[in-house]
Length: 261
Length: 277
Ligand SMILES: Nc1ncnc2c1ncn2[C@@H]1O[C@H](COP(=O)(O)OP(=O)(O)O)[C@@H](O)[C@H]1O
Ligand SMILES: [Mg+2]
Image (cartoon, rainbow over all chains, first blue to last red; front, side, top):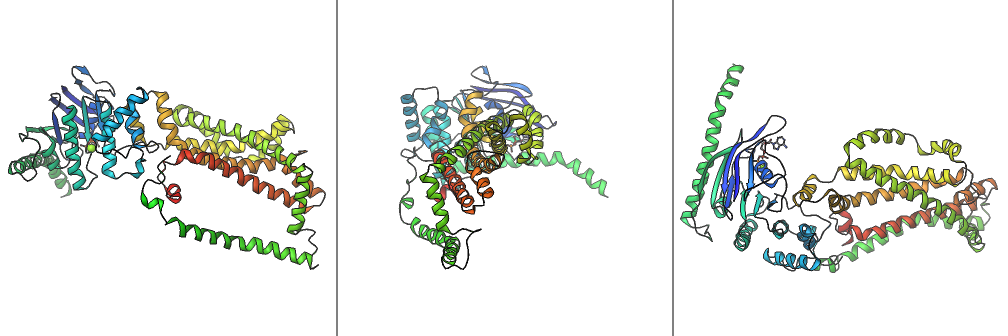
């Protein structure tokens, strides 16, 4: 269980990136986090990953409070962030330095097969395509067997075909180990294909606007009517979040207009 | 390691035409010096020129052969090489250590970097009188001068390398909970290696520059001594033989350093690697 209790984050400059976020995700749940840019999605993931501390509130995994990077929580960034001086298999084995060589090799080989890159273990990162590199990055996070895996717009730099195949890969991986997934995305289709739940955020300050369940069986069919309904529902919620945001912003802009006249 | 030829394109022909054009480039580049040397040789043989101030290639060759046969060349070359090796070793180690600490500890950097930058503004050869006063005219002052010359480029290169390590890659280390030592060993060291090696190479170049200056300040052996000696006894052939020796040794040591460090850098994704494929 991943639990966020009234989490907020105010940056030193006074910028309130997150305000009073409450979220509970049972183990194995998949949450798609959507929202316009600047509404604190990355900040939220960094807090959960222990790369940053909340200004108020607590984040806990299975009851233990997150106070720094931990084995329980893995994070995958928009860029693969592979270490260019290590081969693909050395990259995947990077978090396993404490294991014996044999054990490490075995876990790495299994992870390679699982992300569909068997045979590419000896390559350098520079010899991979964008989609392959991101799969290596996912494998590197998964060998550490985290309970929670956070993904920050992990596929946004990839083309639509590669992205769709990585969605399938990710779900297959999730079915094997059932980690909790929190996926930040700009892509409505991605949210609908991956999420059990979709959480829509809103900026200034970053907060949860609304949230709903996606009750579609897996594997999900992109051509299905129900799937399209889900997409429409997400779009509508996003529009709603933008609309209230503009409504909030209006008085300020009319003030500005008054000033000019 | 095994990755050089993973894709079929790498294994096949496209390298060949480029190589031949590189050779013809080399041939064109050799045209001028070889032509001039031959012309000079002919001019002296035909009696059109005396060749006293500009000795012909045959004379320089004879001088070199004589120096080698008597073992003199090896004595001088060894003395010079030893000075370069010691000065380079000391300067490089201090440059790497101070550069790395300065890059990792902001307080230390604020403390020492301004002083180092100010000292760098002094042309290194200007230190010579002071070093002679402090350390005498024998080996210590020579090696110190070379070490000082090597220190600056290495320090600057390593400092710059540490400061420019991608924050995103350091964060990968944080995510996987590396200790400070592991972060240095598994991320900072390999990430700064290419720039460090480049800095070492320019340091070595400066080491060769400064060994000449060092040997000008009164040495009884060394290739720099041959230069001074050749001037004092009026033998340009000796001077040119020493110049050639410097060129060859400088080139060889740089080539060896490059060769020795190349396996450490095969992973790089830049022009230097694409050129080799
Ligand atoms: N390190 C930081 N210092 C100050 N402000 C920041 C920092 N990181 C993010 N912010 C601000 O917090 C807000 C949320 O940023 P972010 O979490 O990156 O949004 P998102 O990922 O949803 O696009 C933005 O307004 C951004 O400018
Ligand atoms: Mg973001």
